[in-house]
Length: 375
Image (cartoon, rainbow, N blue to C red; front, side, top):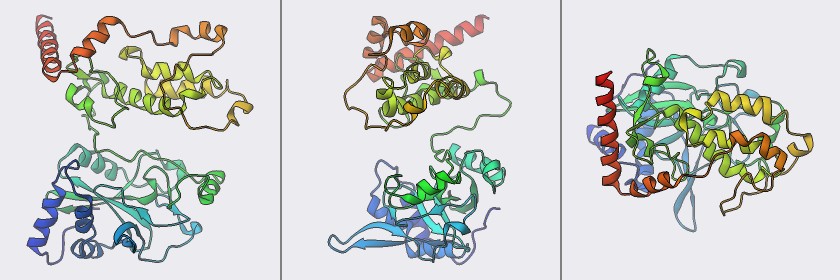
């Protein structure tokens, strides 16, 4: 349900909070934002709606807030059920989230509250997820973070999302398996699950559109984490396929973390190349990537290979096909990405100048419209 805005509101304080929330994340002062998000004003706002915000803990030597921890008692793992999070180890939260507030609900369960701009694509996605209902078992869980509540605040909304499903349904200070035995225990008991959680750059297309109609302007392809942005519009394309772009972005993430292991698990090389190929129509879809892993990579990997430790990837660039068996190279040659043509290299180079990039994109779009009009 949508919780109505109730209670007597200090208009001056509300205006101050809204002004802070409107600041672009690139210009925000995190210390100032935290003072606003965890202010007594918002604490009262959430308390009236059944939520108790975490409290900050301060490192006395430096007199700065280091993180946040629950104010209410925390039950054990046996009292936790989906969509809420397990917790273990140090329950405090590091202070590295923008527009995220951590709290407990009236039953002392942990949640994360995100500030979302009204009428934004992110809000539309979260509203859609909210209307789908909340799963209560792993079998019903579709690995997309549940939205438990939506609370209006001026021209923003507070979206209540299950705390631990921000990546996994478990949290604590020590997030790595090596340091947190609770995480290992949950995985062993098949109670640990994962979820997609960040929809800030998402777009909700009309359900009546075909896949070919779902395209976005080239400027949107620049969003994302630097170093993990596919080069789908680096040649002056005027639009792009966001679904293929997502597969390319995931391929970059996986390759960055695991491509140095192809010498031990060679079948990762064709998987990564098909997820990253610059020939977008030939790129694996998300389903094809999963099917290839499930039917080719995993069955073709021995237990000895699976038991190998995962060392840190090297910093220098590597060729994931180097050192592989010649017979393997021949068998999977059709999956291997070809060297970048000189013409593409030149085009990418000149498109590094913004005015040239925009000019080429404009010419491409004009020619496309002209051709479509003739047909």
